[in-house]
Length: 109
Length: 115
Image (tube, rainbow over all chains, first blue to last red; front, side, top):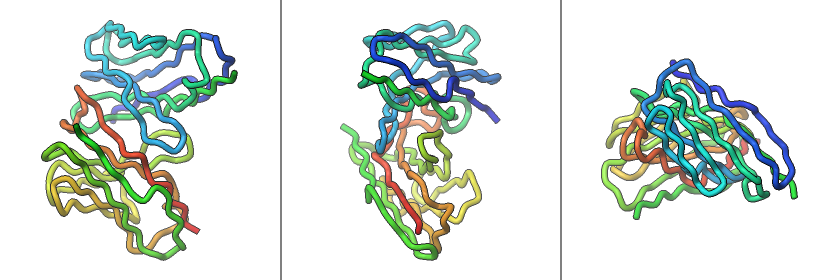
């Protein structure tokens, strides 16, 4: 069974701060995705990383896939209240996507 | 473009009553379809997935069942709800079961409260 561990589980910061959240596994994934979910809504795909060592940027968000394709990180620069939400990573293997339990981010003004 | 519709948005049902949640996808053919349940603010638990009409895979033994009567319709049902069935239910679709390239697209969810 492939598992994804996300850390931290909860993060509360002030607007303007930088942060990094992590997604780790002992399994290798063919690709890894990050989703953001706002309260009362479904998760929305932010990015897919495919190649080991790959780095993708989406405005103030930087996503990195580990060289061994077992882990990933999401770095947010100068966080804003609009970044508040649950960040889920998901790994693609041989079956359905494997989701982590998420990091709940709260950005206060 | 593809869209996914899920309804109702909220539902309050008494214990022992039946349940039917419906999900439809537009703008694509033969999608892979999924039902997830999410505990408050936490991760997703895959309940059922379907790769085609009448083909249902159950991931977790439940008081729930799923059916796919049409290509782009996925239904989650229960004959008798339990208190433990309360939660946030999400339907999703994808082009590939592994979601390797384009991921999963989720509906807006149904908040079910069993009282």
